Amino acid sequence: MTSKHREISIAEFFEKNKHILGYSNPSKALITCVREAVDNSLDACEEAGILPDILVKITKAGDNVFRIVVEDNGPGIEKEHIPRVFGKLLYGSRFHAIKQSRGQQGIGISSAVLYAQITTGKPAIVVSKMEGGKAHRFEIMIDTKKNEPEIIKEEETEWFSPHGTRIELEVKGSYVKERKQSVYEYLKETSVVNPHARITFITPDGEIHEFRRITSEPPEPPKEIKPHPHGIEIGPLLAMLKTTKARDLRNFLKSEFVRIGDKISDEIILKSGLNAKADPHSLTREDAEKLLNAFKLTDLLPPPVDCLSPIGDRLIMKSLMEEYSPEFVYAVTRKPKVYSGHPFLVEAGIAYGGEIKEDKVTLLRFANKIPLLYQQSGCALTQAVVSVNWKNYGLQQSKNELPVAPAVILVHVASTNVPYVSESKEAVAGIPEIIEEIRLALQECGRRLKEYVERKKTIQKRKRKEEELLKIIPLLAEKISQVVEKEPIDHEKVIARIMGKVYVSRHVRDGKAIIEICNFSNSRKKFRVYEMCDGGINGERIAKWDVEVEPRESVSIEYEFNGRHVNSKPLVEGIDDEFVSGAEVVRFGIGAEGTESTA
Image (cartoon, rainbow, N blue to C red; front, top):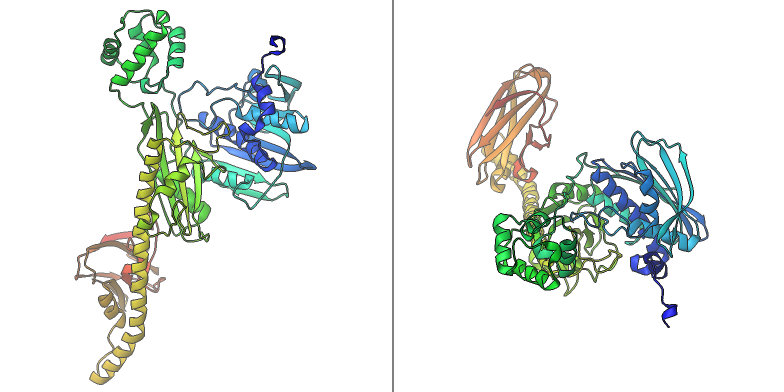
């Protein structure tokens, strides 16, 4: 029997078990190939501080065969590393680095090359160019028995891009559209959490979709950190003891771990009962267990969080507005936390109403800025969303179901070690600390949504009341003025008084104007008033005044002007439309140029 035993390479294993990496069916396989290439491009660009420009093109190359091209403007890859990056599984630059990144194991893009090789027998074509250098073109396959790249062809080539990488694969697959699990949906969701990237997608039908860059600020790149003592296990600790350059145990602790200084190292050594001057290479397994126990008994600061790169609540809101055009949007980035010594943070956002028409909430799940399209029901992110009582926030919800509302909920978990349930990176495991942070983030989003919905209902109720008054008051005013034989009263001012609004009116006579502002509300109001005249106001075409008026008080603005008013009513900025009458609400953002005064 022993004569039949032989070593199996990792490439040979995945050749027969490709479903483990996400190549379980034709449509999923096509998405996975695109995802692995795009994730590599985004990571490379971010590490180099480059704003990503990524082209994804899929063309039909035969019966159920598709040609995938993914091209980026990243820093490029050194010539000697190209074959192994694309042609050797478990070859990468991020596996030993403790920091947030999309890819870590060094399996991703080489698994796509292997899938192409298995299904069509054709090599991957890779072109890469570093700035100031020449472009190198490789045709690569994988020797699965050795897990080594097999270079079919190598040459220098002309390429218009100053730097970047391009990969071309021919794979068997199925292209689907208008589904949650599709290449289009993957790229759309990728653009939401990577607002600094511009992604162009050309479909097999020749349609061009461009996901625009909405910020020119690249994300702060995460920094690599050393292991945290609370996140280490016996095996890695023994390996560290064997390979360390430290000459004694005290220096080993200080140089190989984060959050350990002189005082903490002495405390750990005292609790372990080991000798501070002991040679780390001579320590036994029993000694390593004593160290682990001492780690657990010692209070340590959590790991530094600069190893993480959040999207940021402002950019999440901007992305959701860009992609879904809602009437309300809110997002939150939680403070970093730790599970089993691994730093992580949670971000959540909610977009409601507007152009979102679906009845059931659309859930967008992300881990380290990667969209999770599959295994939604088996993912901790979904479980956390479902566990929130959304009825408290004004949404309908059945037991163990997502809420029912025209809304999109976004959840992003960033970590140095995302606890995926499998190598295909489709769902996150149910770590209690992560689930609790997601719940807290969603509850904050829910509270803000509830405030908005209740405020909207109040405004709608006020508006209905105001519409009824607009039907009645003018008629009453006219009849009363006829009876008492006096000039008609200003019915808009009467309605503003009843509704508790700010009332603005303009009176003009002989080249002079008076703006009267009456605050009928119960709170102080601060806003800006604009007037525009084609002949000018104090030498400027636009005049503006900063106004502050107490409850039940009035202020007046007087000015001289030439020509005629461009705006039929005074313009106001800094007050919501539902709280003002007689003026037109504008949002200049940074203000308009012109003369400025204070009233």
